[in-house]
Image (cartoon, rainbow, N blue to C red; front, side):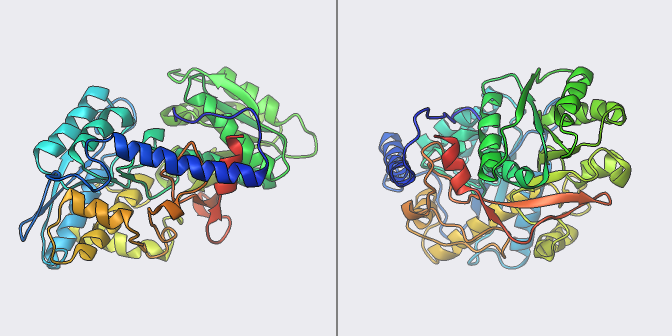
Length: 434
């Protein structure tokens, strides 16, 4: 998260909300005006399909030394096989192109330029840490970016981006709200970086909303090979209250696993503490690999975007994976990336159905989304819509329309719901800017 900025002078609540709404509108309108592609108004927009296949692209890093999300393009292909086996969308076949951005700025931009060259009408259900690199080529070509993973602030600023979740910001704000109810002292271990500097602001805003003191902010190198000293310091800070059990929050991205290995070795030398984290840093596969109910995540508080993987609302996705993924072991239904891709393609399907017999182009898809299409996702998210009225009052995230998160907990080695339904963190996100 690189675009989030905290304002130092707080404003009265009513004024702040009104100002934020105005800034959201101004930011989005300015973005529209600045793009060659505009907001659905230019002639000759990239892509188009009469009765032929509708070409879509999904990208994600694969086989790299850092974050990998191979399940997202694999899920896109399985989704297309399912749709095409059932007559397509309005009789139109989906053609899926995939691209490996390799966690590299230059390659991410190449993927976007390839999307334009291949007449792609939308990039859907994708992951990349290089928003500034891929969004510029997409904007120039007028290609909408539907359902990105939400790992960069740029995805919540571009007028051609249609996010389906609240990104990393909503997860950290929601985690703060969850821990405020359950924890004594909270020790946050996060990267010593510009992006890492935003994490305590968001976490502390959530803690504050529950009447909790701010977290103990502990900086660590994001490329360390072991975190023994950091784990011991976090344990000391989280256990300094003799009455209330504290919580340790590792927010180190891919290095969270490395931190938890050090944490597991040292935790017995300190009073009991619990852990808190967000989906993406941990999922059921990680919990299983680290020992399940006897591992370091037992009792951990976890904040996610969607219902837990065992929820029956995921049954349709799981059926599609079983019947159309052909035993592709890259697709894990518990992976929030795979889940995001499923939801993003649900949005695409609704948009194409709304277009009806008209030409399916990037411009037509943007027009449908910009003019109030409301997409239901089987209650995996609240209804999604990207009108001005649906934007939350956050000047830092002008395209964010879904500030809902879920509270989960690890019990007997399984991620289960800690609270029924969704929790709205809009107020927490707005207050984090003040």
